[in-house]
Amino acid sequence: MKLLRVGTAGQERPALLDDEGTLRDLSGLVADIDGALLADEAALGRIRAAADSGELPALDGEALRIGPPVARIGKIVCIGLNYHDHARETGAEPPAEPVIFFKAADTVVGPDDTVLVPRGSVKTDWEVELAVVIGRTARYLESAEEGLAHVAGYAVAHDVSEREFQIERGGTWDKGKNCETFNPLGPWLVTADEVGDPQDLSLRLWVNGELKQDGTTAEQIFPVGEVVRYVSRFMTLYPGDVINTGTPAGVAMGRPEPKPYLRAGDVVELEISGLGRQRQEFKQA
Image (cartoon, rainbow, N blue to C red; front, side):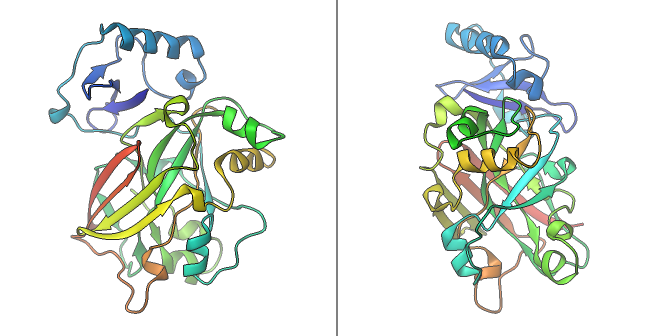
C-alpha cells in the first residue's frame, strides 16, 4: 500500500493512493497514519480490505497539499557515511560500524514544502536518502532478518545538511542537521510488502534540473536489515520511528571547488524508485 497524509500543515488527514493512481480518503477508517496504526495489523488489514473493495471515497489530489506520510514521529535516527561511493567522494574511510546521529522530529516537512536556507549559511547541501519506518518495537534484535521484519515501510527522505555548521563549528554533527525544514519526507509511506528488496532501489536528485545524485541502495555499506538490528542494540525503536539510511555519491561537499552549495531560489527534486518524488524550492530563513 501507498499511505499518505494530505491537507494543510497540522491538519492533514490519512489517505491511500490506489493501484490506478487515485487518491482515496482513509479518514472514515483510521484517525491518522502514525506508529499506533503501523503497529496494528488488524487496522492495516481493514485498510487493505477497503482498498480492494473499492469503497473508499476519492479525493481531489490536485487541490491538496501532501504532508509527511507519518504523524507524531518519535525520533529520527540517521546513518552517516553508509554508501561506499559517498565515502570515496568525501575521502573518508568506510566506517567499521554504522555512524549514528539524530535529527529532531520537528525538522520534518512535506515532500513539496519550502526548505529554508539557514541565516548565515554558505554550505547548505542536498542528500537523497531511503527512510525506513519502524512498525514493531525493536530492542536487542539478533539478526538482519529480524531487522527487516520490524520495518513497516519505506519513504523518500531529503537529509538537508549545512556542512559548515556540521563540520567546522565544533561539537557533533547535529548543528548542521537540525535546522528548520531540513527533513522533507514522503510523498508516501510504501509498505514493506510492496517494496520488496530494499537493497535494489535507485535514488536520484536534481538541482535546478541538473542531475547531481544517481545511486543505488546496493551501494550501502550496512544494509537496511543490519542497520535496524544494529540500532536496536543501542536504543529501543518504536512504531513510527524513522531511520534515514544514508546518501549515495554526488553531494555538493564531494565536488571540486567552488562547491555548488544551495542558495535561496534553487529548486531540488529527488526520487527513489517505487517510493515517489519530491520537489522543494529553497528560500531564505
